[in-house]
Amino acid sequence: MVVLDLTVMNLALPSAQSALRFSTADRQWVVTAYALAFGGLLLFCGRLADLVGRKVTFLTGLIGFAAASAVGGAAVDFSMLVTARAAQGVFGALLAPSALSLLATTFKDPKERAKAFGVYGAVAAAGGGLGLLIGGVLTSYLSWRWCMYVNVVFAVIAVVGGALLVGRQERTPGGRLDVPGVVAVSGGMFCLVFGFSRAASHGWGTAATWGFLAAGVALLIVFALWQSRAAQPLLPPRVVLDRNRAGAYLTVLILGAGVFGVFLFLVYYMQVTLGYSAVRSGVALLPMVALSGATATLGNTRLLPRFGPRPMVLAGMLLNAAGMAWLTRIGAHTGYASALLGPIMVTGAGMGLIFGMVAATGTFGVAPRDAGVASASINTGQQLGGSIGTALLNTIAAGATTRYLTAHQHGRPTPDLVQAAAVHGYTAVFWWCAGIFTVGAVVCGTLLRPGPLARSEEVAAREQSRPAANALQ
Figure 1 (cartoon, rainbow, N blue to C red):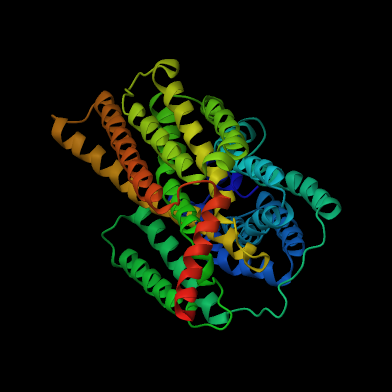
Figure 2 (tube, one colour):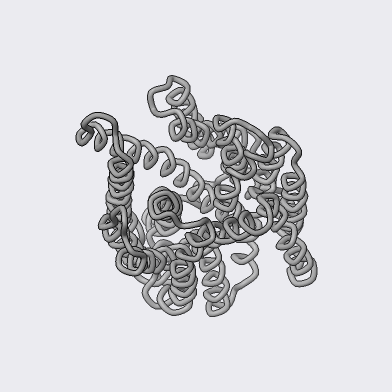
C-alpha cells in the first residue's frame, strides 16, 4: 500500500484534474501533500511504534490509511483530495516502520528471517512498477477514484491478517518521547522535502527553494547535536553509528535518488515519445517487477547469509548503472525488445538485490526497543532520496532538452526536433543515473563491512570492547 501510493496517483492525476477541475499548478500538491506528511513524520512514528507497541500502530496505520483512501476516492473537490492525500501520508508514516519492525522482532531464526526480508524486499522493489501498472489499468478501465479505493481492499485483508496472526508486541519499558527531537527532525524533513519539491516544479532559482533547503539542513544539524545529549533520544546514535546499518541507510537514499529515473522518465519516454498507453507502459515494466522480486528473494535467502551485504550492494548498484547506461541508446522510434527489455531486466535485478539487503541490514542487530526507529530510518532515506532525485533529474532533463533545441533550431521547431530534444533530455537523465549508481557502489561498498552480517557484528562488538579493555588495563 505504501510503496504503491508513491506512484499509483501519478497516472491518475490527469483524470482527477479533469474531474475535479483544479489547475495544473495545483496538481503537484496531490503528490507533494503525501510526500510531506510521510517524510516529515517517519522517525516520529517509528519511535511511537517502539513506545506504544508495533501491533497497535500497525493496525492503526492500516485502518487510517484505508479511511483516508476512501475519502480521497470520494473527493468532490481539490481541497478534499489533497487533505485525504496528506492523511494517507500521516498513516503511511505510521504503517511503514511498524510493518518492517514487526519483521525484525518476530523472525529470530536466521532462515525464516531471510525468507521474511526476501519477501519484504520483493514487495518494496516491485511496488513502484506495480503502482504504474495498477494505476494504468484502474484509470483506463474504471476510474481514477479506484486508485484510492483499491487501498481499502488491501487494508481489509491486512487488518484481518494482522489481528489474527501478529502476536502481542512488547512496549519499550519506561520509554518517553523526545519532543524536541520530534520537532527538529520533522521540521527538517518537511523543509527538505518541500524545498526539493519546489525545485522540481519551480526551478532552483527561487529564494523560497533555497530558504526551505537551508532551514531543513539547519534543523537536521540541530537534531543531530541534540541526539547526542538527550536522555532518551528519538534516534539513538547507537542505531546509525554501526557501519552496516549506516551503509544500508545511505544505500537506500542513493537508490531512491537514482531509481527515480526509471519510474518517471522511462514512463514519460514510453507514453509521450513512443505513444504507449498507460496500461501498455505498465505491462512493459512487468519484466522489471518480476525480476526484482525474484532477485530480492534469492539474494536474501542465498546470498546475504553467505556473503553479507557488501557484494550485494556492489552488484546491485553496478547492475543499475549498467541498465541506465544501456538505456541511453534509445531513440525516437526505438523498439521495445531491441532497446528497452534488456535494460529494464538488468535494472530490475539490481533493485531486487539492494531492496532486500537494505531491509535486513538496516534492522540487523538493533535492540527490540529501537526496531521501530531503525525501520523508519530506512523509509526516511528512501523518501529523501526520491525527493532529491525528483528535483535533480527534472532540472537535468529540462536543461538538456532546452540546450538541444537551442543548438539545433532553425526557425520554428518541428515536431521531430521537439521529439529529438525530449529524447536527448531522457538520455542525459539516464547518464546521470548511471553516475549516481556508480558513486553509490563505491561509497556504500566502502562503508559496509565485509563478510556475513553475524560475523561483522562480532567484529564490531570486539572493536567496541577494545577501548574499555584498554582503559581497565
